[in-house]
Amino acid sequence: MKLILSLTIFLTYLLIILGGLVHNTGSALSCPDWPLCYGELVNTTSQGSFLEQMHRVIASLIGFFSMGVFIKCRSYKKSHPRLYRFSLATFMLVLFQGGLGLSTFLYKLPTLISTTHLAFSLIFFCCLLSLKNEWKLIFEGNFLSSDDKTALQKTYNPMIRDGIFFSISIVAIQVFLGAVMRHSGAGNICGLGTSIFQCFERETTQILYWSLNPKVQINLVHRYVALLAFVVVVWNGMRVFLMAMRTNTLSKDLRVSILLHSASLIFLIILQAISGAIVSKSNISVFPTTFHLASACLIIWNLWSLRNRVRNLELNLFGEVRHTFVSDVLEITKLRLGTLVVITIAVGIFAAPGNINFFKAILSLVLMTMVVCAATTLNCYIERDVDKNMERTKNRALPSGRMKPGVALFIGYSLLAIALPLLVIFVNWPTMILSLIAAVLYLFAYTPMKLKSEAALFVGAIPGAIPPVMGWTTVTGKIDAMSVALFSILFIWQIPHFLAIAMYHAKDYDAANIKVYPNKIGFSKSKRDIFLYTIILVLVSLSPYWIGFSSVTYRNIASVCGISFLILSSFGFFIKDHDAVLSWARTYFWASIIYLPLLLISLIFFN
Image 1: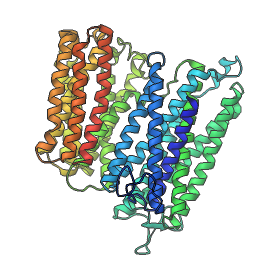
Image 2: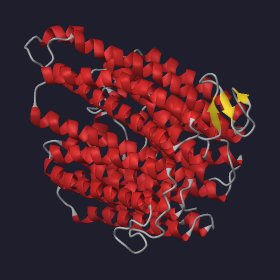
Image 3: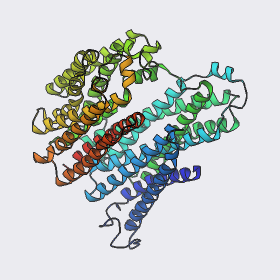
Image 4: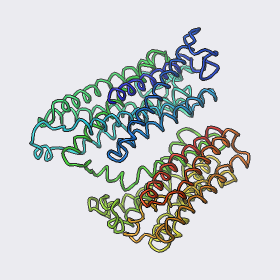
């Protein structure tokens, strides 16, 4: 199993590099048909067709290996659920990547699809690394070389993990900017001036520090973030290296692994900076550009591996991942929930007709994310006493006492005070007003109503459905039929989604006196309601096609996804055992998490 995982990781790295080579050599559309090339399984008539076929073959191998790993890990679903979840995630991601790869071919390399394809390749890559790490953690055991665990517990600083997190974040942003730059044609617009802060514009031979030209802006921001990434990665790499040097109680294998990863990380970031300078001077020639991508992927590989090893160390020392102020802030801002909300906002931005400046779109996303994080933080503050009564929430930062309530209150209101005025200045009034309405409804209508009436479900679905409309108004500045369709899809989706959550967390909600329908009407009627609302969701999901906004391709994808989702919802009628019903509800919940992004992404790509 470990060998298969190692091979899949290596092939994924090779596939990412080969994808860069295919793009850099202009080979991306060398084969006019799919999955064959000029009707042949292997075509060597040109370098381009050979490279593109190699890319397809390796992608297929990764798909088969991922399916095999998932099948193997299904047997550990109950004994090692984390291992199973990683295997499921990799399998779903590889299917999604296959669809993106096909879309890239069919729609002739649009920047959005190509950039998304690379981004999800890196997410898949990191997921594979975590899957392998989880396998080793379960089946290979201890990481300490002596029984002096107490001494190490006293000297260990969990802030090390925060440093790795910030390094991963800044490198991910840099890779994303590089992908946008490469796929949009912004990469060859600037040469290297006398410093990294200068753009030698090749068309005008001017030296620029900034420009109104969006491509110059992307190029220069990529350079500025590169400098920041260099400083952050070197600093945190040195911290991890010195920690491993000073710690004698680690096992030899773990200590050597951490030392090698941190040392190679510093070497790679220096190499990355040099290769970036060569790319700027060489006018985006093939070898330097591909090497630049390869070293960036190695940096992510090292950072993610370090993150896994430090996490393993904490689990071994303390039996849990240690909390820090940064992790607590990320917890109260509910980053996972925020990610889904940001996706729905992005759908509104990318689906809306008309053009928007790249950095205005990014700034809009950041500001609206700040509003979402403010609302979730203030929600945690309001519900801190309620959370103490629920098993799944009692160890959070506020109910456990790790964070003072005043700190959360300050963070929440500060985010609102910064984001709302900036939305007016840099975006528009309708988007700010919608953001404010969503926050107010969530905090002052839905949150208190949860303790009084089951109808809070429908009230809470309103602020949950506003984000895509915010994305739409960011571009258009107005609410129209399509924005109403987006609102309707999100509003209806939330009802069966939350009913499923309320079923398998019914005891927790009852203990906290939170009013939910499964506890009032029973599980049988809740299963009926999930099925009925899923029918409505499938019909509403077709509304973009009915109003003439989306294509037949979107209609077909929405129909297939909807019918599959509806079939799953109907299974509840045939399950009588209580534990089996809870398992079905959890499966429906995760299926809804998969269904919504698929639907919304297809709405962007196939409108």
